[in-house]
Amino acid sequence: MSDNSKPPYNDLIGDMLKKRENEDGMEKLKGFGKPLPKEYFSGDTFQHFQRIAKDAGYKPHWLKLQHEISGMIHEIATLASSGEQGDLQKRVEAVNEKIAEHNKHCPPPMLKGRISLDSLERAKEVWG
Image 1 (tube, rainbow, N blue to C red):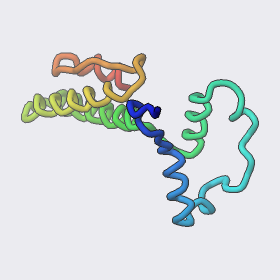
Image 2 (cartoon, rainbow, N blue to C red; image 1 turned 135 degrees about the vertical axis):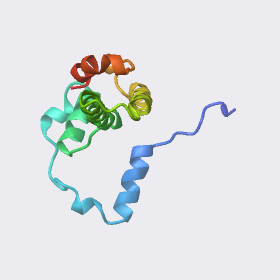
Image 3 (cartoon, rainbow, N blue to C red; image 1 turned 180 degrees about the vertical axis):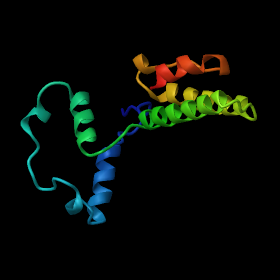
């Protein structure tokens, strides 16, 4: 008797690699054909994935958002200090939407709170 309640096994990474092989793109990758360093096979798999991804220049979505949010906060603070009041509240709301998206994707220790016009100086410190 087969168990139909289990979903079929999906190897998403394997499927992506096979597709890349079929497109003749593997040979163009940095380090193709070279053995992986021995430290990649010891210890925590997730940490090794992060190191390999970093070495390849990959940035997680939440980290890209973090840099974008920081820039937006600094821009709002500059406008506010120059006395411009135009659409600052709309800009703050846009930043808070980005913060909500950031918090959905980042590791729990990296969660950050919403900002307001009154908390711009503190937000600049928090977001860098």
